[in-house]
Length: 418
Image (cartoon, rainbow, N blue to C red; front, side, top):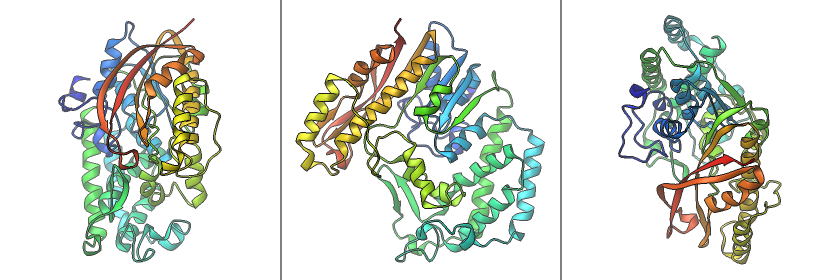
């Protein structure tokens, strides 16, 4: 376990993936919002009784689940995004080194000979996915998307475990091969992208480099204290009811900041074939926490909380100043969803178990969303009591939130009430 996290920078907050780019498995895919393996280890070490089973209802990049295996605890994780679910499961799976090497060689041998028709493969995708695009904008140059499709066809010839792993390898290369980049504001076209053409050779080089990273980590860590795991794919609000007894529920949900995380992974979801038609995109958004207003969704009644009710009253008073008139309803629905997560966590918690959540505040038109306080007021109805709260990081608010207020990121600990 120590060698697993030894390359993590201890100068960065453990609540985020900052300082973990060199950490094995973390570097399989750039997941900016993930918390670190060290945080998982610290939480486990702080418990009176070492957990045998750890649940994360927001799997993300799989940090909780992978670290649990190294710590000897059986992980259960839930993830709604199919690409991220594959990323998680690829990290949790045990592999034969020789078989991996064999299948990598097979892909390299056949990929250039595979015929693909990208207009058929991506018939339902947005026009901007590849050249000639729409209004002179496209994400992938045509030779690049053609080679990506060839790799996909070669990968689909493999067994399920290897298909999943190599799809993740390919997925990790996509943004670097594209004409866009991802930042805190979402997906944007690179400056001067029109003059930086890429071809099939760039795809080959990127795939080889990424496989070498993944293969090295698998070879470096052939043993774990626990190899068993459970991955539930789908909406955590529903699937948490299926979870078995757990000693620790550790997670970081999307924050109520109107940031649509689904949009961040749209490139991978379309290019790798997880999405075939636009309805797939909407269905995934519908299955996520109501933390954004990217689509019009059925809203829920806000749960009972004195702080939340005052917050919603304040938001309604400044509705005309908000960049979206739907924000008050989104905030109320977000906490309705979080109340379900707290209740689901409590339902599968052992007598000595704990729920630990990393959450972030938000702010709209100078109306502060005090997430820790609201959750502490919702917890008793779920059968939990907040026993610990401390700030792990300060975050600057976005332009949409005013950029004037420094927002807090908090670690909250709950224990069951009897």
